[in-house]
Amino acid sequence: MNLPTVLIGILVAAVCAAILARGIYNRRHGKGGCSCGCGGCPHSGHCHPEKKQ
Image (cartoon, rainbow, N blue to C red; front, side, top):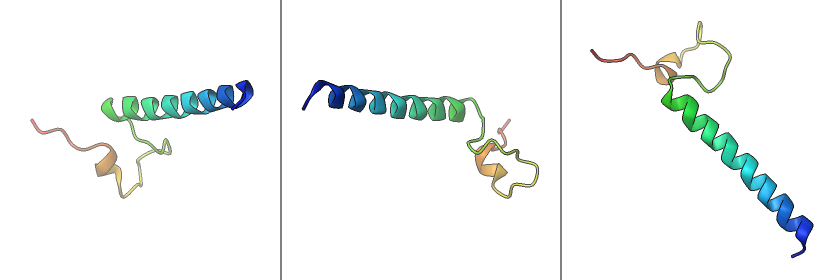
């Protein structure tokens, strides 16, 4: 393998890791994944479950 191939591989891996980390962060903070609003979404209960008191 040559240097450009290794650098591109590292760049692709970094982008994938950033996308995964952002998804985990959003999920832990109760944000949905589709970013289209939950007004008429039949799956809004899965993205934003009601908290038990």
